Length: 363
Image 1 (cartoon, rainbow, N blue to C red):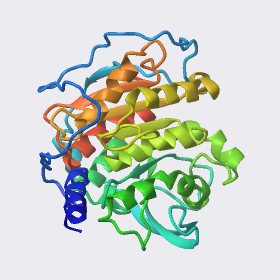
Image 2: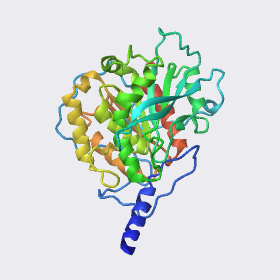
Image 3: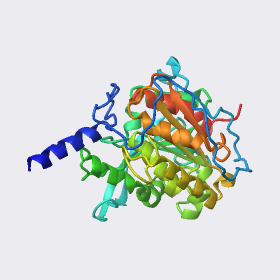
Image 4: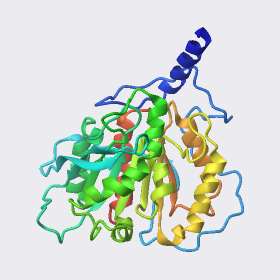
């Protein structure tokens, strides 16, 4: 019994390092000394632009997406200007919604879930002719619905990006992969929850949100939701980043833009067992099999140079950049925040940099 208890304690110490910030958390999270990885790599100690050293023979992308991405494939994020944290004269509105769903990760029974929806200044629910791009943003371990509107100054950033013309008026959705019965402290349970979230998104959340708010989807039929994929994005931080990669794997038909922040793809493997090459192989084959180079997809992958879980992001970026004849700058970019750590400050900077790339006008 004593050995079992010790094993459980060690396991908890290992996974607790992946804890995401909870409500309004801004503090730095330090690295647990026991965190290890089954994948061996040498990490840069300072900000370093990854340079591909090998290239695999892959099918070269011969078509371009409708919107040309003009930023370099690798680089560093720009800090959020101070004025973007100030209250806007044209603030958007955040609305709490409830929607019918199922407990896909456990019992399968019918449940009610919660999400928070930001609509921009001037949004008129009676004006069905005005349509809006939309992004869904997922929290990490122990997070909650509405989190992306609770970070200090975050909503002001969205308001100012719109008011200053960096992006058009957009809808922002902050849902949760948890339900009321979830044990947020149970790390393995949390992993199980986000691994099933793609079902929540496709079957329940997206139809509920876009059946009420005016996205580019003409209706909530699968056909119309797929037809509007060019106007839809999904992003997330930490375990929400892993969720974002899984949205690419499962819901590429519905989403064109992806913003994984501080996390890699866990289609195969999991924390500390990255299986990077196998996961990138899977993504590459997915792109080929579904003609996504022609249909268009784009990934803005971000991490802080001092983020304590940066290893997985660096490994994934290095692997994808080594195949830059396939994952071109029109499909994948990797950006680091200088001195960035695993906190909300970094998240706000990633959003400030990525949203104009997704939805802004070419300049």
